Length: 121
Image (cartoon, rainbow, N blue to C red; front, side, top):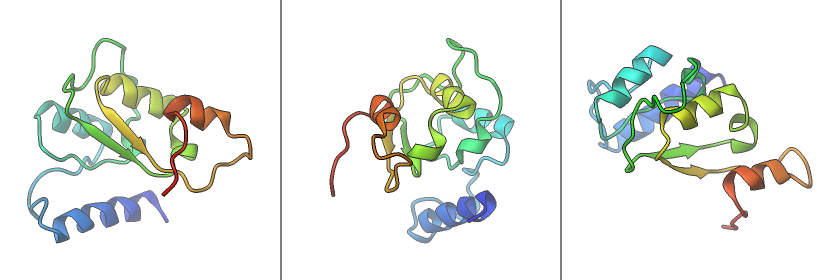
């Protein structure tokens, strides 16, 4: 699935449940837009990891709120590089919930170090 399609799918799911309004500005269109939305203290902001494409200096976060929950899918593919570091620097007090159903290696210690021990459904 292409990032644009995934972004649309996630947003439409929440809008379809009435969590956000169809006209409400909650979808980040770019890295700069994401920074602005997070600075506005919205209840919901929808973004993909690709929007964390601007370097974020540690100590200069987009938001210092401690009530932000970041939900990560495909964590084994997205949470180790530059954009993941930018995400963590941008949201230093956020809680991260990560899902991965297909670790790339049998002994995937990197995912375990970043997110802790695995849970089972």
